[in-house]
Length: 441
Image (cartoon, rainbow, N blue to C red; front, side, top):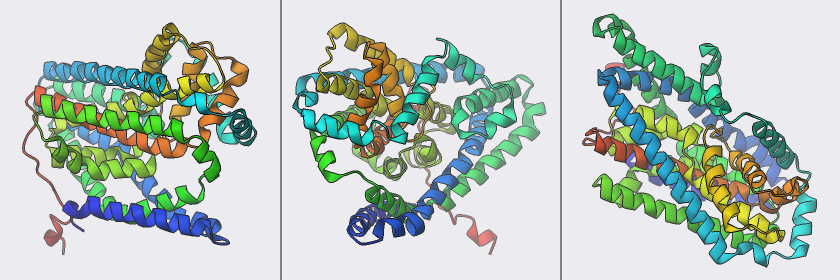
């Protein structure tokens, strides 16, 4: 399987997974068959990607920093990255608020639909779990996310994929320390991490050989576990506004790539497409991170010094698609439940959604936890939180899949722009899984 064909193979896997899933939905015992015999292969694939995420960040980020040989260059990359991430996230939230106020999807939701959704989902364990997690996060202090960035045990941080910011902090700390002890003393450790980086990237290549089959399994399971079609239709207008907003964000990224990176946006999207398709299938920026890094470095041409910092940070703090969804979902819930949200309250949503996106786990469903925090910031009645989440819970998974695509596209866009600005964007050099196969035959 060659990489040039990969995006087509993944797309075929997606189509077959959707068709197979719909077919099994209407067969007796079909759902159980998919759950027991098909879904595990998708789960294994996600586990493999998560397995190599931390080693990849550790190896590539240390290699990237040590290759710079100048701390000031790393400072420039860091400041530009954070600045652009804040800018694109702000644009996403404002775009979402404009669309939801113009199209007003919440005004068309009937009382009957609200009652049906509330009775179906208000006590769902998924909704109650999101409320509990949001309550825990709201009790944290204003600088809690900075405090949480610093690990007290490096081994513990490296052993938990949800502590990505702690891994990044430790890795940057180690990389800068390697620069400060001098090239000669750091040479043995640098050679180790250079070799580890090559090995982990080869692991990505090997895992991606199974991607089409894994995507088939993941999407088949999503289909058979989806909600009542009638409920989905009732929320079609709300979902349509979110999808339109996400599409416009992709257009926005294409404009940025064209203007600032001087790259053809269609070429850019084509090179990134395997990572986008996996983001859609997994609904997790963290799980997709190894593939995103591989596509951005080898197929778009971003130097490792840039991608190794920008992409792991982006997977944790840059959630443009999720932030756009926050604005739309919050106003939609307010419209449906006749809760007045003046312009001043909606400006609060911009700030709260921006801050809430920092440090939120890059895993499926994290957006709903952020949403509760946003609703609390505008004075939404606490007793109606469960009803509000119930209104959107039925369509959250498919929308989560789409906004994860936007999240990783935003990460890749920023990486490309930053690389261009520091002269670290070069001609792509794709690699294949069997490049050195003849050496081990």
